[in-house]
Image (tube, rainbow, N blue to C red; front, side):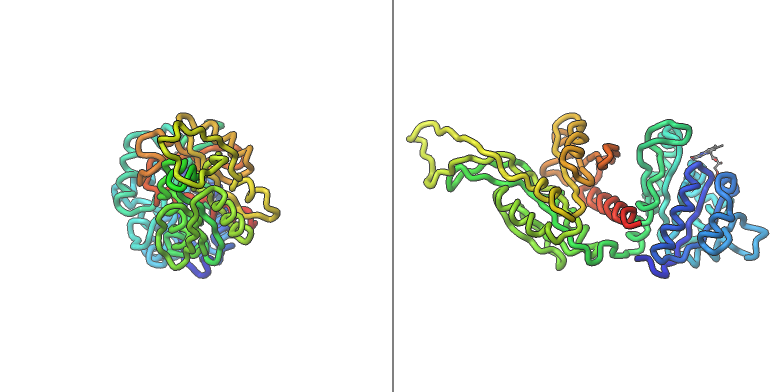
Length: 396
Ligand SMILES: Cc1cc2nc3c(=O)[nH]c(=O)nc-3n(C[C@H](O)[C@H](O)[C@H](O)COP(=O)(O)O)c2cc1C
């Protein structure tokens, strides 16, 4: 996937520096050429010999005294992308202000290529106002910010500030390089809300607009996947997207099951009716006939049918909740999905019809990760980064 791509991994002085070794190994497994550069503090956390052994090249640890006259500009010109992982508060502050006083900051400041930073620090350091300002400044300057996420931190604390896993950084690198990291992968996405007829003119429906599913289908297609989009809503146009228009849960189930049988990833962003009228009137129900009684019967469980497939695809479910997303954690485990995206549809800027979404990612082990409010396109990109990372981790 990253054959012969030239990547600089810059390591700074935080506990997560040990994960930089794993990141270097992952990038090399993908075929990349990797050079490393470390701050002096980073050498307190991980030995330069480790990075030298993994990458085949001694890390640059100082601006002066190594073989090169100008190691930072050499590295900066060589790199197609620079990843600062972990990125400490101190290094983030230097980069935000263009202060190039060590090997890492000088290399980044001298570069013209895309730069990714993966912040890693205690929650208090992450939430410190200057850190937040500096990260916002870097993002505004075009630096790609990968994470951080929530979880166990050094010393046993827990909270925001944990570095994203190396596989996710590899996915961010691929994206920064325009690599089609889903090339040839077969994907099925469901979108929109199903409509269950009462009579020829009326139906029971829901408020799903299909925007989230469309964004997911489009990002997968751009990354090279062959996408089957099973939808009730207007669909995006892309040469890699085949659209199957459906209306009812039954039709969505049949189309999805057929597509999922040969898919590697299935994403269930549609809002599928759980119940449908059990007797659909052949003619229009008329007011003059008095108040009708509508009885319901269950619809097929589209998701369950795919989860139960032998050798079925990697499954991403969605849960629209109102209020707390706790029920989603239970749902993820009960349904046996690989990932679940939960959102509180009652929250402003989140859920049906909006262009933005604020979601919580639930993993199959029950761990959760809250993502800030962002566009549905950004949620889709981040979701695919996670899926690509998990497929990468699963392949090793
Ligand atoms: C044990 C220990 C752990 C540390 N972990 C972190 C960390 O995870 N993140 C961080 O931003 N700073 C951390 N620090 C503080 C940095 O090492 C310190 O700010 C240093 O100046 C960073 O330098 P650098 O950015 O040049 O590598 C830690 C310090 C110690 C002593």
